[in-house]
Amino acid sequence: MEEVFGVFGDPVEHSLSPVMHNAAISALGMKARYHAFRVSREGLGDALLGACAMGFGGVNLTIPLKERALELGFLEPDALSRGIGAVNTVDFKDGIRGFNTDGVGALRALEDACGSIRGKRVVLLGAGGAARAIAFQFASVGARVLIVNRTEERGRRLAESVSSVGGDVEAFGFASLGELLDSAHVLVNATSVGMYPLVNRTIVTGDMLHPGLVVFDIVYNPLKTRLLLEAEAAGARIVTGEMMLVYQGAEAFRIWTGVMPPVDVMKRAVLDALGV
Ligand code: NAP
Image (cartoon, rainbow, N blue to C red; front, top):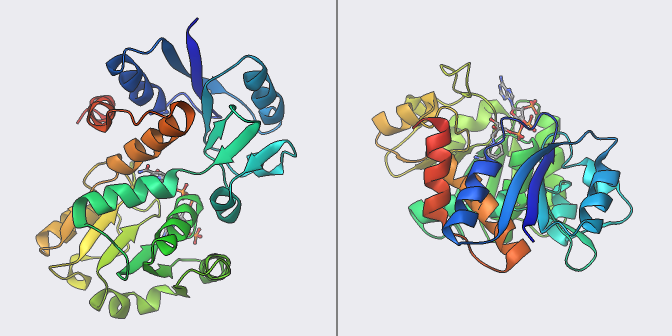
């Protein structure tokens, strides 16, 4: 029988996960299929119990379900997803277990481009869902994480929760950005600034960047955001957002199946879907 995987969310019809995972499934010759399911916040508990009862291979969760999953008494989150406060991957092999692979996805995408970030000064723009996953993951591998968020209080709260599990992290306001960037090794944009349709926006401009800095924008629509165009012109090394998406999916696939899927095939499927 064909094994079923999927993504639950609402809205979910624009998710790139089905094309990406189905490309991997085909390349591996597996008898399986990955579908998108529209599931509301209220329906998440029933949907997960149903998926478990029907023998699904595993599911991803997207907006607005990642945080909601932690409110379900029967779901067992691992330590990382509990710290982040969000679950994006559910596995049914041994109970109903929750994971968060967004941070691993970002880490692999960045380290592919610049090697280990242990001991590196990383300026992280944002304190929303994606930034939380990145802050926990990067701190866990020994990076010094400098959070800069528009709403300073939200940035401070994130820094406190990452510090409470031993991370080397501090929060700042936008006024400190120039000074922080002068001595930074990496800048990560984990805000939605620069995303379609407001593609001309950027928080950091080229004059604040220096050659030798690695600039990673997790926004993947467009692939080359205004920030990355300015970074290129300033002589900085750039990392585009699609590989974070691919690697978070690949890690979920590995959790479900024990097999690391072909990331080059998944990347091609994502780029085709984005029309790049
Ligand atoms: P989110 O939870 O809504 O957080 C949004 C963040 O952006 C907050 O820190 C917010 O600051 C900041 N922000 C929004 N508008 C701003 C503005 N005009 N000026 C300054 N800061 C602003 O969103 P998310 O889920 O973290 O996603 C953020 C972005 O990452 C989205 O573009 C998403 O598509 C992308 N993403 C990519 C991947 C990938 O795999 N590549 C994965 C996840 C997300 P405040 O706290 O002040 O509101």
